[in-house]
Length: 115
Length: 115
Image (cartoon, rainbow over all chains, first blue to last red; front, side, top):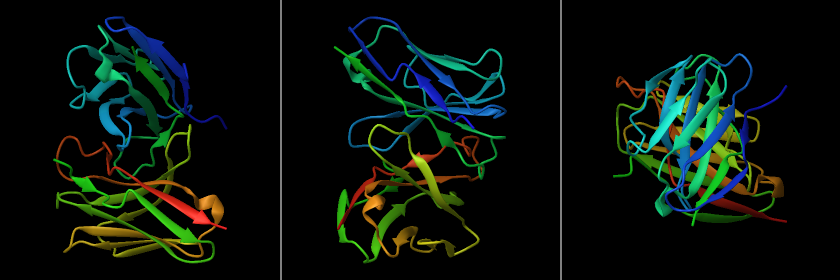
């Protein structure tokens, strides 16, 4: 079956612009996670959805970052007024029900470069 | 402050020998531990996990050991194969906080298995 997919695979933008990153989770998975991975670091948690609602957004770095999941499947991560420090690989993961022992399956990521 | 530490950024091992990857954590509230493997341009892939009530879990060539008193876990790969060459991340989750479901990752260890 299809895994987690993310589009675009690469995004280059200019400082100050707005970007949207899309995640298609595994069909039927109710839990969806966004992480950010900077060079030489492990992924860092951003936000977790259970169904349509953001159950935990404690990892979002500031109010320029926002994510939605309006129908409980596809999610979009939105970044306003991008800064060079936002450059990273943005990873999405999904799991079947969101308990902490459920395996999180990751997509290939979107590499964001802010010039 | 890093809650999960992988102090060796790289490790080289001869094919057929044992690979040992190490990880330390600081938060005693973590109660589920995982290892993920990551190839270039792909998302992390789940490898093996262990609950805090156990001290060992084995899956084929992969064994994870947990020493709760030392807040230390390790991944053993025996025998190592060239296809095992990848970045290995240890991660933790669980605990009683509201953020129990998010994964907290170490910074990764690049394993190179030499033929």
